[in-house]
Length: 396
View (tube, rainbow, N blue to C red):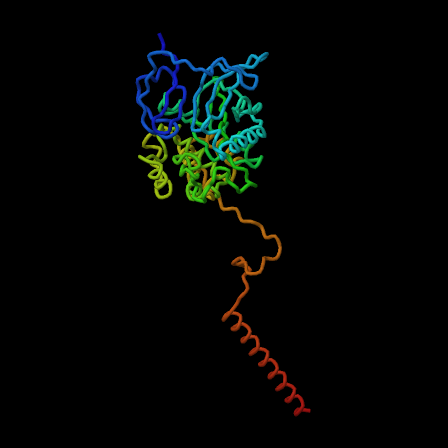
């Protein structure tokens, strides 16, 4: 008799998530903090007191998992065939004055994004002392679970899943939203193979430089926890969460792509600090060491996304999609590195700005030398004309 899926709690980060029954008895890393876990299905069924209760007009059916601040349930709505997911704040989190605004902000951001590759939010509310979101329920699993179960994902399948996420991310960026926590654990895949980006809890609006989570300028919250997951964070996000841009999301998507095709993280370590140090100072191990069958165009694309400098990555999600589509279509052809885009001149340069090499005016000794030479030539011409005039006068 097959073992049913079960809830597993990581002792390191306290995240709780559902695990396929086929993984029972194995030791695998936590999809959130990477701490090794001994997966073991419980011998007896554990009753959940909230199952069967109603919240926001939804009857809770099954607990799906929990994070640092919230718990997620599968639920059903009266008169609807499809189920929904209900995410609620824990009582401890609800008492934190910084968490509630962040939770409400997540609902607002998610509601603004209606895209087939982003998990949608139907409604939010506060009922019986509980803050909650009613979200789209995705029948399927996360990319993190896929890697845990399969080890490595065939490169073409991985590429097409990442391509779908990039399309959802492109729409989010068009709305002025940066995700800041893209990783396989936050990407759901439906039973039909549709990838959906989830969890906008750390998302940032580009026109809002304030951080609700108490960012101290070092990429950390007031509790000292990095804003994001270190293994997927680009160098600029590690240095300061305020420097996060859409290019930072493309790095995280590239790091997720790397993990899918290799089965390992681009950067790993015994602690978050060790991982972040590697991200800042080292290069990822060659993909060929883990997945030699990965074609060169795909390898080149992934490594381009993992560039430590934002300028070395695709310019935006649109370019990311075009370049990945080209790599899928011609996997054995590595395109030449893109030429840096030169910004056209927009009129007179502001005072003090450096001029281009072709139009830079001569200053200092160069200008004085040129001026002196011109003066000498003028004197010579004047003297020659005067001499010619005297000769003409005497000849007359």
